[in-house]
Image 1 (tube, rainbow, N blue to C red):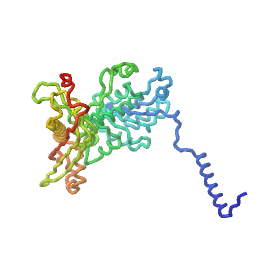
Image 2 (cartoon, helix red, strand yellow):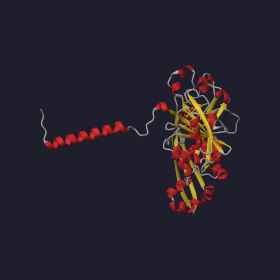
Image 3 (cartoon, rainbow, N blue to C red):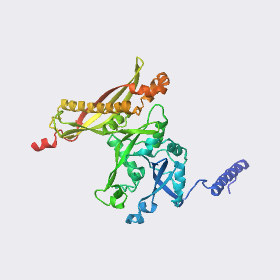
Image 4 (cartoon, rainbow, N blue to C red):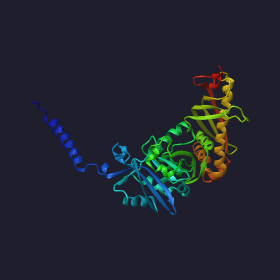
Length: 414
Protein backbone atom coordinates (compact mmCIF):
# COMPACT_ATOMS: atom_id res chain seq x y z
CA UNK A 1 0.00 0.00 0.00
CA UNK A 2 1.44 3.35 -1.12
CA UNK A 3 1.16 6.36 1.14
CA UNK A 4 1.11 9.97 -0.04
CA UNK A 5 1.19 13.06 2.06
CA UNK A 6 -1.97 15.16 2.44
CA UNK A 7 -0.90 18.02 0.11
CA UNK A 8 -0.02 15.66 -2.75
CA UNK A 9 -3.23 13.68 -2.24
CA UNK A 10 -5.34 16.84 -2.41
CA UNK A 11 -3.59 17.98 -5.59
CA UNK A 12 -4.14 14.62 -7.26
CA UNK A 13 -7.81 14.61 -6.23
CA UNK A 14 -8.27 18.13 -7.63
CA UNK A 15 -6.74 17.18 -10.99
CA UNK A 16 -8.97 14.11 -11.23
CA UNK A 17 -12.06 16.15 -10.45
CA UNK A 18 -11.18 18.72 -13.13
CA UNK A 19 -10.64 16.01 -15.77
CA UNK A 20 -13.90 14.32 -14.80
CA UNK A 21 -15.76 17.61 -15.06
CA UNK A 22 -14.30 18.23 -18.56
CA UNK A 23 -15.33 14.76 -19.75
CA UNK A 24 -18.84 15.19 -18.40
CA UNK A 25 -19.13 18.62 -19.98
CA UNK A 26 -18.10 17.25 -23.39
CA UNK A 27 -20.51 14.34 -23.14
CA UNK A 28 -23.43 16.58 -22.20
CA UNK A 29 -22.90 19.51 -24.53
CA UNK A 30 -21.30 17.84 -27.58
CA UNK A 31 -20.38 20.01 -30.56
CA UNK A 32 -22.95 22.81 -30.76
CA UNK A 33 -22.95 23.02 -34.56
CA UNK A 34 -22.33 19.37 -35.40
CA UNK A 35 -24.36 18.01 -38.30
CA UNK A 36 -24.66 14.40 -39.37
CA UNK A 37 -23.47 13.68 -42.92
CA UNK A 38 -26.79 12.01 -43.68
CA UNK A 39 -28.53 15.32 -42.96
CA UNK A 40 -26.46 17.31 -45.47
CA UNK A 41 -26.21 17.70 -49.25
CA UNK A 42 -22.57 18.57 -49.98
CA UNK A 43 -22.17 21.25 -52.66
CA UNK A 44 -18.90 21.12 -54.61
CA UNK A 45 -19.65 23.85 -57.17
CA UNK A 46 -21.91 26.90 -57.30
CA UNK A 47 -22.99 28.76 -60.43
CA UNK A 48 -24.48 32.25 -60.61
CA UNK A 49 -26.28 33.55 -63.71
CA UNK A 50 -28.28 36.67 -64.49
CA UNK A 51 -32.02 36.35 -65.15
CA UNK A 52 -33.45 39.79 -65.97
CA UNK A 53 -33.19 41.61 -62.62
CA UNK A 54 -32.79 38.39 -60.65
CA UNK A 55 -30.09 35.76 -60.27
CA UNK A 56 -30.21 32.07 -61.03
CA UNK A 57 -28.33 30.07 -58.42
CA UNK A 58 -27.12 26.56 -59.30
CA UNK A 59 -25.70 24.12 -56.74
CA UNK A 60 -23.82 21.04 -57.91
CA UNK A 61 -24.38 18.53 -55.10
CA UNK A 62 -22.57 15.24 -54.60
CA UNK A 63 -24.53 12.04 -55.00
CA UNK A 64 -22.74 10.10 -52.27
CA UNK A 65 -24.02 6.68 -53.31
CA UNK A 66 -22.81 7.15 -56.88
CA UNK A 67 -19.28 8.36 -56.14
CA UNK A 68 -18.74 5.81 -53.36
CA UNK A 69 -18.94 2.97 -55.86
CA UNK A 70 -22.45 1.87 -54.94
CA UNK A 71 -25.32 1.89 -57.39
CA UNK A 72 -23.72 4.75 -59.26
CA UNK A 73 -20.99 2.45 -60.55
CA UNK A 74 -23.62 0.63 -62.63
CA UNK A 75 -24.77 3.89 -64.12
CA UNK A 76 -28.07 4.13 -62.19
CA UNK A 77 -27.18 7.40 -60.48
CA UNK A 78 -25.33 10.47 -61.74
CA UNK A 79 -22.29 11.41 -59.59
CA UNK A 80 -23.83 14.84 -58.92
CA UNK A 81 -27.22 16.50 -58.98
CA UNK A 82 -27.92 20.11 -59.91
CA UNK A 83 -30.35 22.20 -57.87
CA UNK A 84 -31.42 25.56 -59.27
CA UNK A 85 -33.47 28.47 -57.97
CA UNK A 86 -34.07 32.13 -58.83
CA UNK A 87 -34.14 35.04 -56.44
CA UNK A 88 -33.61 38.78 -56.11
CA UNK A 89 -30.55 38.02 -53.99
CA UNK A 90 -28.12 35.16 -53.45
CA UNK A 91 -29.57 34.55 -49.98
CA UNK A 92 -33.15 34.41 -51.23
CA UNK A 93 -32.30 31.93 -53.98
CA UNK A 94 -30.32 29.76 -51.54
CA UNK A 95 -33.17 29.65 -49.03
CA UNK A 96 -35.77 28.94 -51.71
CA UNK A 97 -33.67 25.99 -52.83
CA UNK A 98 -34.68 24.13 -49.66
CA UNK A 99 -38.04 23.56 -51.35
CA UNK A 100 -36.31 21.23 -53.82
CA UNK A 101 -33.63 19.57 -51.69
CA UNK A 102 -34.56 17.17 -48.91
CA UNK A 103 -31.30 18.04 -47.12
CA UNK A 104 -29.56 21.20 -46.02
CA UNK A 105 -27.05 22.20 -48.71
CA UNK A 106 -23.59 22.42 -47.15
CA UNK A 107 -21.00 24.63 -48.89
CA UNK A 108 -18.00 24.02 -46.63
CA UNK A 109 -16.41 21.72 -49.24
CA UNK A 110 -16.94 24.02 -52.23
CA UNK A 111 -14.30 23.65 -54.95
CA UNK A 112 -15.41 26.08 -57.67
CA UNK A 113 -17.57 29.19 -58.03
CA UNK A 114 -18.67 29.72 -61.66
CA UNK A 115 -19.90 33.19 -62.62
CA UNK A 116 -21.92 33.59 -65.81
CA UNK A 117 -20.52 36.19 -68.22
CA UNK A 118 -23.69 38.31 -68.31
CA UNK A 119 -23.84 38.30 -64.53
CA UNK A 120 -20.14 39.20 -64.21
CA UNK A 121 -20.59 42.15 -66.58
CA UNK A 122 -23.45 43.50 -64.45
CA UNK A 123 -21.41 43.46 -61.21
CA UNK A 124 -20.64 40.72 -58.71
CA UNK A 125 -20.24 42.74 -55.48
CA UNK A 126 -23.46 41.59 -53.78
CA UNK A 127 -22.68 37.90 -54.29
CA UNK A 128 -19.10 38.34 -53.08
CA UNK A 129 -20.39 40.20 -50.03
CA UNK A 130 -22.80 37.40 -49.12
CA UNK A 131 -20.22 34.63 -49.54
CA UNK A 132 -17.62 36.59 -47.56
CA UNK A 133 -20.04 36.97 -44.65
CA UNK A 134 -21.33 33.39 -44.60
CA UNK A 135 -19.24 31.42 -42.08
CA UNK A 136 -19.80 28.11 -43.90
CA UNK A 137 -17.81 29.16 -46.97
CA UNK A 138 -14.06 28.75 -47.00
CA UNK A 139 -11.94 31.16 -49.03
CA UNK A 140 -9.69 28.74 -50.94
CA UNK A 141 -12.07 27.63 -53.71
CA UNK A 142 -11.45 28.74 -57.30
CA UNK A 143 -13.48 31.36 -59.16
CA UNK A 144 -13.97 31.20 -62.95
CA UNK A 145 -16.13 32.81 -65.67
CA UNK A 146 -18.48 30.87 -67.97
CA UNK A 147 -17.72 32.38 -71.38
CA UNK A 148 -20.61 32.72 -73.86
CA UNK A 149 -22.56 30.07 -71.95
CA UNK A 150 -24.42 30.00 -68.65
CA UNK A 151 -22.67 28.92 -65.47
CA UNK A 152 -25.36 26.27 -65.03
CA UNK A 153 -24.46 24.81 -68.46
CA UNK A 154 -20.85 24.33 -67.35
CA UNK A 155 -22.02 22.51 -64.22
CA UNK A 156 -24.15 20.05 -66.21
CA UNK A 157 -21.43 18.52 -68.41
CA UNK A 158 -20.34 14.98 -67.58
CA UNK A 159 -16.54 14.98 -67.59
CA UNK A 160 -14.07 12.17 -68.34
CA UNK A 161 -11.25 11.25 -65.93
CA UNK A 162 -12.95 12.98 -62.98
CA UNK A 163 -16.23 11.89 -61.41
CA UNK A 164 -17.58 15.39 -60.91
CA UNK A 165 -17.45 18.48 -63.16
CA UNK A 166 -16.29 20.54 -60.15
CA UNK A 167 -13.21 18.37 -59.66
CA UNK A 168 -12.47 18.49 -63.38
CA UNK A 169 -12.69 22.28 -63.45
CA UNK A 170 -10.46 22.66 -60.40
CA UNK A 171 -7.79 20.14 -61.45
CA UNK A 172 -7.72 21.21 -65.09
CA UNK A 173 -7.27 24.87 -64.20
CA UNK A 174 -4.52 24.16 -61.68
CA UNK A 175 -2.64 21.93 -64.15
CA UNK A 176 -2.98 24.27 -67.15
CA UNK A 177 -1.94 27.33 -65.13
CA UNK A 178 1.35 25.57 -64.36
CA UNK A 179 2.01 23.99 -67.76
CA UNK A 180 0.42 26.23 -70.40
CA UNK A 181 0.90 29.80 -69.19
CA UNK A 182 -2.28 31.41 -70.58
CA UNK A 183 -4.61 30.57 -67.69
CA UNK A 184 -4.44 31.47 -64.03
CA UNK A 185 -5.96 29.76 -61.00
CA UNK A 186 -7.54 32.45 -58.81
CA UNK A 187 -8.89 31.61 -55.37
CA UNK A 188 -11.85 33.44 -53.85
CA UNK A 189 -9.70 35.25 -51.29
CA UNK A 190 -7.44 36.67 -54.02
CA UNK A 191 -10.36 37.64 -56.25
CA UNK A 192 -12.18 39.55 -53.50
CA UNK A 193 -8.96 41.22 -52.40
CA UNK A 194 -8.36 42.52 -55.94
CA UNK A 195 -11.97 43.66 -56.37
CA UNK A 196 -11.82 45.92 -53.30
CA UNK A 197 -8.23 47.04 -53.94
CA UNK A 198 -7.55 50.53 -55.29
CA UNK A 199 -4.12 49.57 -56.62
CA UNK A 200 -4.86 46.41 -58.63
CA UNK A 201 -7.80 45.03 -60.60
CA UNK A 202 -9.03 41.44 -60.85
CA UNK A 203 -8.59 38.75 -63.51
CA UNK A 204 -10.36 35.38 -63.85
CA UNK A 205 -9.95 32.48 -66.27
CA UNK A 206 -12.83 31.79 -68.64
CA UNK A 207 -14.24 28.37 -69.53
CA UNK A 208 -16.41 27.33 -72.46
CA UNK A 209 -18.05 24.19 -73.80
CA UNK A 210 -17.13 22.54 -77.09
CA UNK A 211 -19.52 20.17 -78.81
CA UNK A 212 -23.18 19.47 -78.14
CA UNK A 213 -24.34 20.84 -74.81
CA UNK A 214 -27.34 18.52 -74.55
CA UNK A 215 -25.12 15.48 -75.15
CA UNK A 216 -22.81 16.67 -72.38
CA UNK A 217 -25.67 16.40 -69.91
CA UNK A 218 -25.85 12.63 -70.45
CA UNK A 219 -23.76 9.91 -68.85
CA UNK A 220 -23.08 8.65 -72.40
CA UNK A 221 -20.70 11.60 -72.70
CA UNK A 222 -18.09 9.83 -70.55
CA UNK A 223 -18.73 6.41 -72.06
CA UNK A 224 -17.34 7.53 -75.40
CA UNK A 225 -13.69 7.49 -76.47
CA UNK A 226 -14.28 11.00 -77.80
CA UNK A 227 -16.86 12.80 -75.61
CA UNK A 228 -19.60 14.77 -77.39
CA UNK A 229 -19.01 17.79 -75.14
CA UNK A 230 -15.95 19.05 -73.28
CA UNK A 231 -15.19 21.91 -70.91
CA UNK A 232 -12.09 23.89 -71.84
CA UNK A 233 -10.36 27.09 -70.71
CA UNK A 234 -10.86 30.15 -72.92
CA UNK A 235 -8.95 33.36 -72.25
CA UNK A 236 -8.76 35.68 -69.26
CA UNK A 237 -11.61 37.94 -68.17
CA UNK A 238 -10.53 41.38 -66.95
CA UNK A 239 -12.39 43.45 -64.36
CA UNK A 240 -12.79 47.03 -63.28
CA UNK A 241 -13.78 46.93 -59.63
CA UNK A 242 -16.57 44.31 -59.49
CA UNK A 243 -17.59 44.46 -63.18
CA UNK A 244 -16.16 42.37 -65.97
CA UNK A 245 -15.00 44.46 -68.95
CA UNK A 246 -13.89 41.95 -71.58
CA UNK A 247 -11.41 39.26 -72.58
CA UNK A 248 -7.72 38.86 -73.28
CA UNK A 249 -6.68 36.51 -76.08
CA UNK A 250 -3.97 33.85 -75.64
CA UNK A 251 -1.03 36.13 -76.45
CA UNK A 252 -2.30 38.88 -74.13
CA UNK A 253 -3.05 36.33 -71.40
CA UNK A 254 0.50 34.99 -71.67
CA UNK A 255 1.84 38.54 -71.43
CA UNK A 256 -0.24 39.23 -68.33
CA UNK A 257 0.99 36.07 -66.60
CA UNK A 258 4.59 37.05 -67.34
CA UNK A 259 4.10 40.42 -65.66
CA UNK A 260 2.67 38.75 -62.56
CA UNK A 261 5.36 36.05 -62.35
CA UNK A 262 2.75 33.30 -62.80
CA UNK A 263 4.65 31.41 -65.50
CA UNK A 264 5.80 28.10 -64.08
CA UNK A 265 6.32 26.52 -67.47
CA UNK A 266 5.33 27.53 -70.99
CA UNK A 267 6.16 26.71 -74.60
CA UNK A 268 7.19 29.39 -77.10
CA UNK A 269 7.09 28.44 -80.79
CA UNK A 270 9.03 30.11 -83.59
CA UNK A 271 8.89 29.65 -87.37
CA UNK A 272 12.03 28.25 -88.96
CA UNK A 273 12.44 31.33 -91.14
CA UNK A 274 10.75 34.70 -90.95
CA UNK A 275 8.84 35.91 -93.96
CA UNK A 276 8.49 32.46 -95.53
CA UNK A 277 5.41 30.28 -95.86
CA UNK A 278 6.81 27.50 -93.73
CA UNK A 279 4.74 25.68 -91.11
CA UNK A 280 7.75 24.10 -89.43
CA UNK A 281 8.55 25.30 -85.95
CA UNK A 282 11.12 25.28 -83.18
CA UNK A 283 9.48 24.79 -79.78
CA UNK A 284 11.23 26.07 -76.66
CA UNK A 285 10.09 25.07 -73.19
CA UNK A 286 10.66 27.76 -70.58
CA UNK A 287 12.06 26.71 -67.21
CA UNK A 288 12.68 28.56 -63.94
CA UNK A 289 11.32 31.88 -65.17
CA UNK A 290 11.40 34.83 -62.80
CA UNK A 291 9.79 38.25 -63.05
CA UNK A 292 10.77 41.49 -61.37
CA UNK A 293 8.95 44.79 -61.66
CA UNK A 294 10.45 48.11 -60.71
CA UNK A 295 8.64 51.43 -60.45
CA UNK A 296 10.47 54.73 -60.85
CA UNK A 297 9.79 58.41 -61.45
CA UNK A 298 11.56 60.37 -64.18
CA UNK A 299 10.78 64.08 -63.99
CA UNK A 300 7.60 63.17 -62.18
CA UNK A 301 6.47 60.68 -64.85
CA UNK A 302 5.84 57.08 -63.68
CA UNK A 303 7.96 54.40 -65.35
CA UNK A 304 7.53 50.64 -64.90
CA UNK A 305 10.40 48.32 -65.81
CA UNK A 306 9.69 44.61 -66.19
CA UNK A 307 12.56 42.11 -66.11
CA UNK A 308 12.08 38.49 -67.25
CA UNK A 309 14.77 35.88 -66.64
CA UNK A 310 14.88 32.14 -67.16
CA UNK A 311 16.17 29.17 -69.12
CA UNK A 312 14.87 27.56 -72.27
CA UNK A 313 15.17 24.09 -73.77
CA UNK A 314 14.45 23.08 -77.37
CA UNK A 315 11.85 20.32 -77.22
CA UNK A 316 10.67 20.20 -80.85
CA UNK A 317 13.25 20.82 -83.57
CA UNK A 318 11.61 20.80 -86.99
CA UNK A 319 14.08 23.26 -88.49
CA UNK A 320 17.32 22.14 -90.15
CA UNK A 321 19.72 24.05 -87.95
CA UNK A 322 23.01 23.25 -86.29
CA UNK A 323 21.89 22.96 -82.69
CA UNK A 324 25.44 22.25 -81.54
CA UNK A 325 26.44 25.77 -82.56
CA UNK A 326 26.05 28.23 -79.63
CA UNK A 327 25.13 30.97 -82.10
CA UNK A 328 22.11 28.92 -83.19
CA UNK A 329 20.85 28.70 -79.61
CA UNK A 330 21.52 32.43 -79.20
CA UNK A 331 19.46 33.11 -82.31
CA UNK A 332 16.59 31.00 -81.00
CA UNK A 333 16.86 32.74 -77.63
CA UNK A 334 16.58 36.17 -79.25
CA UNK A 335 13.42 35.06 -81.03
CA UNK A 336 11.93 33.77 -77.77
CA UNK A 337 12.70 37.02 -75.97
CA UNK A 338 11.12 39.04 -78.78
CA UNK A 339 7.92 37.00 -78.51
CA UNK A 340 7.77 37.43 -74.74
CA UNK A 341 8.21 41.19 -75.05
CA UNK A 342 5.56 41.28 -77.78
CA UNK A 343 3.11 39.37 -75.57
CA UNK A 344 3.65 41.73 -72.64
CA UNK A 345 3.39 44.77 -74.94
CA UNK A 346 0.08 43.47 -76.29
CA UNK A 347 -1.33 42.94 -72.80
CA UNK A 348 -0.24 46.37 -71.58
CA UNK A 349 -1.47 48.08 -74.74
CA UNK A 350 -5.00 46.67 -74.58
CA UNK A 351 -5.33 47.39 -70.87
CA UNK A 352 -4.13 50.98 -71.21
CA UNK A 353 -5.98 51.88 -74.41
CA UNK A 354 -9.18 49.81 -74.38
CA UNK A 355 -10.04 48.79 -70.83
CA UNK A 356 -8.09 51.24 -68.64
CA UNK A 357 -7.81 48.64 -65.88
CA UNK A 358 -4.64 48.08 -63.87
CA UNK A 359 -4.65 44.27 -63.70
CA UNK A 360 -0.84 44.25 -63.48
CA UNK A 361 -0.67 45.89 -60.08
CA UNK A 362 1.32 48.95 -61.19
CA UNK A 363 -0.56 50.87 -58.52
CA UNK A 364 0.59 48.37 -55.87
CA UNK A 365 4.15 48.91 -57.05
CA UNK A 366 4.05 52.69 -56.59
CA UNK A 367 2.10 52.36 -53.36
CA UNK A 368 5.02 50.36 -51.91
CA UNK A 369 7.99 52.11 -53.49
CA UNK A 370 6.74 55.68 -53.92
CA UNK A 371 4.03 56.17 -51.27
CA UNK A 372 3.98 59.98 -51.56
CA UNK A 373 3.38 59.76 -55.32
CA UNK A 374 0.67 57.14 -54.80
CA UNK A 375 -1.05 59.19 -52.11
CA UNK A 376 -1.15 62.12 -54.49
CA UNK A 377 -2.36 60.20 -57.55
CA UNK A 378 -4.42 57.26 -56.26
CA UNK A 379 -7.73 59.06 -56.71
CA UNK A 380 -6.72 59.93 -60.30
CA UNK A 381 -5.28 56.52 -61.19
CA UNK A 382 -7.65 56.18 -64.16
CA UNK A 383 -5.87 59.16 -65.72
CA UNK A 384 -2.37 58.09 -64.63
CA UNK A 385 -2.44 54.40 -65.58
CA UNK A 386 -2.85 54.86 -69.37
CA UNK A 387 0.16 57.21 -69.41
CA UNK A 388 2.60 54.91 -67.61
CA UNK A 389 5.60 54.05 -69.77
CA UNK A 390 6.44 50.35 -69.62
CA UNK A 391 9.95 49.09 -70.40
CA UNK A 392 10.49 45.36 -70.91
CA UNK A 393 13.67 43.32 -70.74
CA UNK A 394 13.53 39.59 -71.39
CA UNK A 395 16.61 37.42 -70.87
CA UNK A 396 15.64 33.82 -71.56
CA UNK A 397 18.80 31.81 -72.26
CA UNK A 398 18.48 28.66 -74.39
CA UNK A 399 21.18 26.48 -72.86
CA UNK A 400 20.67 22.91 -73.93
CA UNK A 401 18.56 20.38 -75.79
CA UNK A 402 16.85 17.22 -74.61
CA UNK A 403 18.48 13.89 -75.59
CA UNK A 404 19.63 14.81 -79.12
CA UNK A 405 20.94 17.84 -81.00
CA UNK A 406 19.58 16.77 -84.39
CA UNK A 407 16.02 16.81 -85.65
CA UNK A 408 14.42 13.48 -86.52
CA UNK A 409 14.48 14.33 -90.23
CA UNK A 410 18.20 15.00 -90.06
CA UNK A 411 18.80 11.69 -88.30
CA UNK A 412 16.84 9.81 -91.01
CA UNK A 413 19.06 11.35 -93.66
CA UNK A 414 22.00 9.75 -91.91
